[in-house]
Image 1 (spheres, rainbow, N blue to C red):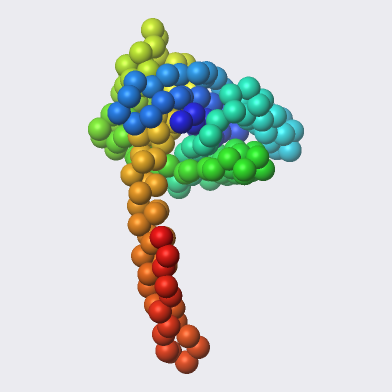
Image 2: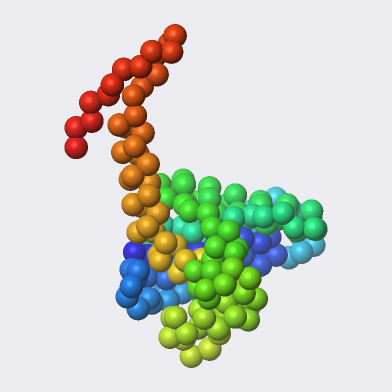
Length: 189
């Protein structure tokens, strides 16, 4: 599986592409950062993020895109920029029909380091080790993007099985009729 990880940000949007399957060595195919000037107007900055992500999608043709889920921070301005960059990444992938997964920062940290409270240095060190890199990717946004891709590759098989089980359970559940009655749906495998 080839996954493009996106660590969203309006000034620095980390991008990393990892290929592999759970339980096997992973390979980094590319890593970088899409940068926009902090003093630029919002519209042109969002267009620059979109163009950067589109270029990575064109070059690497990922099967999945993993984006860091935006969480509440103390600085509302930072949260807004992160959310806007995240939406651009989701839009770019969805426009192409590429499935998108959102992962929380603690979920990514736990997947890569074993601790949901790991700091950026620990995440970078583990990304370097897991991908057998000569040096830690810089800046931290780039390493975080690779960590997102790794997290998604490792979690995808379990997530897929869970989604299949939930779909089967919904299909086997009796349908509710108006007025409170039920009817049994026949499930054909």
